[in-house]
Image (cartoon, rainbow, N blue to C red):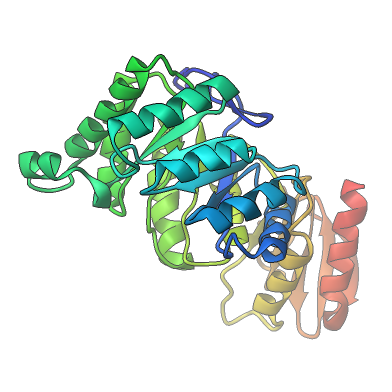
Length: 351
């Protein structure tokens, strides 16, 4: 797939756009003012492969906490600001690597200009975030509903104003909880700008519904060459957002991180606890960066034959399983040791 060439900016040391790898982001759901909990979650996200983390900054106390958090983590941090431009100025002073603002709700043009001036002096990028639920009233009146065209017009108004201030360290997101509207909005926006685009389907939902919406919306855009960084939004532990993001990138052969688990849906031939086995193995291997193919099959019918391209795997039988590598049988393993043996074999494989 041919990817659209966009400008390159940097969030901390992470390049975005300009042909750089698609960067994976997430957002903490801890209270930013709880420094220890927030640092712990940032560390968990980083271990899962999250490259940029966004934090909500609702008040001055959160700014103070942000400064302390920033001093103790290496992951680039973006400050998420709404309603008060003074918080944006304060987090810039506290060392933010990036800002996420909606210029329409952060204050007057004069207030936004102050933020842009300081961000420019510090060479800190700004993400202009437009969501279908936060459009200007006049734009909603014009289009009668938050259509893709309405979202793009809103985003372009913000972009043009910030450009008029001589600032170009911009990335843009333009999200809706409606997948089709999200896709159409990003397609329209991509035709109008060469700034890097931050992809996402906002308020996507629970683990299942949110994963499906994100895979369809983000995946479609990436498959068509649109997008430079992404966040999967789930009503879930944000670590799950990162895992889903990498699965989307893996499915499109864009980036690979962590083992690829190949497992069957089970049927009446399955005589082992395959669900439990898959869960144990997946969790134990979740922080491995290498990406071997690991097959976990419920019976010998779907074992070495169908998973012959896997680097290593097991196929279940009554009370035991067959360990195989590249489709070749190695040995039989008791069911109660299948997870342990497979996990160890994978770790040996990637050492």
